Amino acid sequence: MADLESLNSENFEEKVLQSSTPVLVDFWASWCPPCRALAPTLEEVAEEMKDQLAIMKVDVQTSSDIPQQHDVLNIPTMILFKDGQEVFRIVGNRSKRALKREIEKHL
Image (cartoon, rainbow, N blue to C red):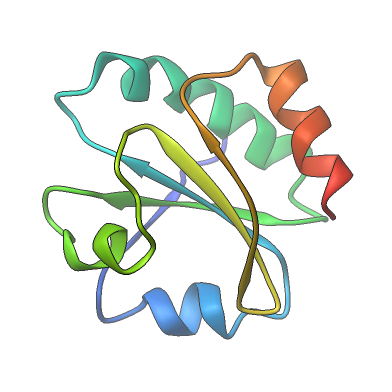
């Protein structure tokens, strides 16, 4: 399984907003049961779709400025960025199949 890269205030712009590859950002927290349940699914999707996009994580507790800048009100929230712009977002847990179907629509 893929080990998802963690983002913070110092690397978010470079890794996400300036990326030439689409990036799905998972906004999560360690105390959030749905976030923990989603983690293995995201790792599998990251491995299966590694040629099409990157999947990275933002811990809302340690990097609270990033979710505020992107109006993340609930977790887990996943936002797909393409060419530095938000393309779509998903709030809540999804099955791997449903998540991949949503992502593929926007690539």
